[in-house]
Length: 156
Image (cartoon, rainbow, N blue to C red; front, side, top):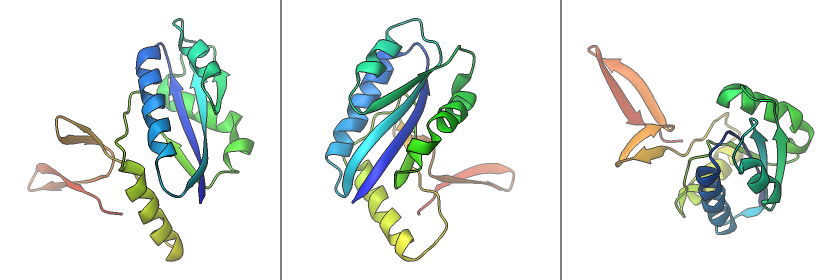
């Protein structure tokens, strides 16, 4: 059984953030081999109800910044601030606050994770994000083929 830390930064998107965290929570509760999970969130000085929502969301720790960190610097700040808590978890999942997980996304990922752990391989796993049935980021290999960009799904 694995313990999962999830890390995200957000700004003024309470509706998307709420939808995302609810979908992730539902999937995690129904994912085999997950013992417990915890969200580590950075609110980049939202003016809407984002901070209120996050501070009241179960199993969530919140850091509020002064703003203008954007996603990358916000993720770095959040990771550094909660580092001593995050390293106690088996799996770290960084995510964007607009993702919606499907019910089997993490079961497949956990199965591959266990297999790679047994083989003592170095790895980074990703759940791809799809829009209109096309992968828009994550889980792809990129290369040029005769000056034409090519994307192929990367299997773990």
